[in-house]
Image (cartoon, rainbow, N blue to C red; front, side, top):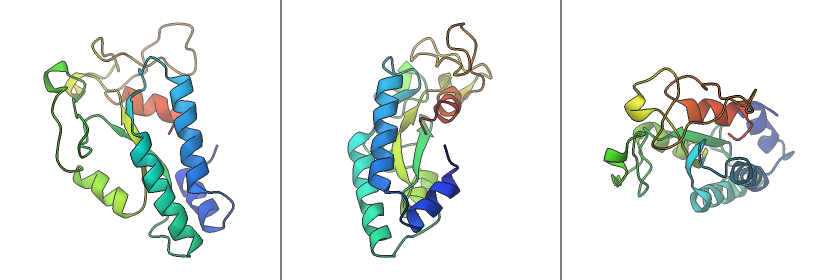
Length: 165
């Protein structure tokens, strides 16, 4: 377990490889989220391509930013080009944007790796983290008892607390 900046330093120092790290995150997310209650969708192809590019830059000493190669998850409120952005609502589940949201585009230009889109409350209108349409992620500290994960960014919080982002 390391922070994003510590992981970036490990890439800088050649102690970690963005490809291996991204693959580890993708594998653990797929294994630990079979019901897709944390990630609405993993973006394996994109994550692998971005990790490959980050690894190449690191090998050539051309890292773009401290976050170059660092895997990030994105709340399903942020547009990812050519991927549905539902905002936690069935009403928008077929909305496919042509471009990344500006914040995601900037992170990508800095070299961050987009792992996928996390679940959220419908239209971000709840502080409990509950979404009966797309699934509510279990609180990672006690998944045996149904506890609310909290916040409209429930999937994002649970992905980080579970070590899946």
